[in-house]
Image (cartoon, rainbow, N blue to C red; front, side, top):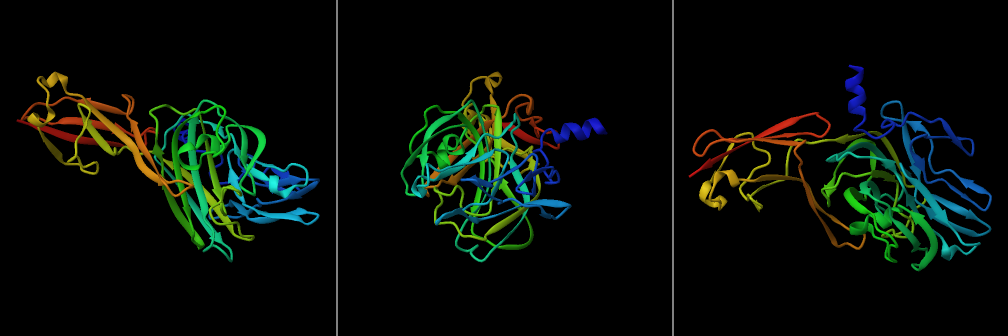
Length: 352
């Protein structure tokens, strides 16, 4: 039983229930596996992430805060991430200020949904988006300039910066010196208030068949990041997060027969689905090739344009095909969830 539990946990994010508060920042407990967007500038420290009672046990909590000194202040977004939040200010010139997130965790899995319980409160929740974000990639990106408070580039070198990876949805508008290969993304941004714990599920879409090498997750109480935000930041908006779970599916989005999409295929059906042999346009049944895709969808990017994700093809470790007969027993397509949590069998009957 212990081995089964350990294997299942390998497909989940570290400390998904936000219970390990073993670090400190300015005398405040901090999560060990997750990082808050706390600010340490010109000798001052501002705490965005604090420990709070959760839906179960403790939870992650962050709040937008006004930070600064000597009359130089700005509101920053509160967010929790598996990566490393960063801020940069050249001297005391507030116009040069920029921020973001680099890195994440080592990761080779391909989940289909991120589920998390949240509360979101504040006086201005109707004016500002909160964000729930998952993305994965392979390779390494490098960037050297990022959008600052006045919309111009500030020079600072970063490795695996979020905007250098998410080129389809939140790309660094000043270019990337070295590109990584993004594999997937799940992103929700919404203006809403949740006074009670609410379960949110975010679908994850794929733009590559590759197996990722790293992933990152961000939960933001307000517009993220500060200077690519769509409509300002509001002091006091906050978010509570607890019990995050990655869900792995045994369903598929699209079926290809000999490279052509089967338009009448129903991915939610358990019944036999029929296709005519003449429609397959093959001379020999031995030439029949069946492929399945998952993770197809689209997102509205930071510039309110449509970013499309074409999905990924399932490999032999996730899908097996048992041949059938023409006008006889159906072809069986058995799909297994990557974490082994479920299987689904599709029945395809080929008729003359």
